[in-house]
Length: 162
Image (tube, rainbow, N blue to C red; front, side):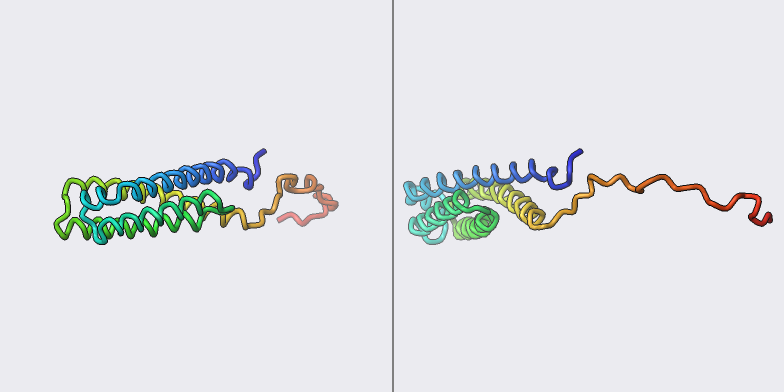
């Protein structure tokens, strides 16, 4: 018989595996943003130019390292969600100021997709973390009533008949 505590083990493992994958993705994306900052800034037309793209790259690398090294990656994944919000705002601003519509649209769709994954993972990690802190009472060894009910000691004949 599986206890409630053990039911969440698979979900916890999957959430942490996804968080590790997002951590490595964050580091890879950050390196790409550092190495190709001028080209990305030109293609996307976001505010801040190449320096803004490099700053986003450094943020991605720092967040990725935090996710991979932290015992509990939950706050770092929520940090990724906040970073995604900044990225979405910057991309929208760049498109509104006359940046590349095609490049901006593709980047906006990609960031929105990753944002949904980040939010889903952060939500599950938060739930798992909350459940991990909960003390679970284990009643699996209990059978219900200690024994069958005993018949009444009063015979039926002595009861009044209605």
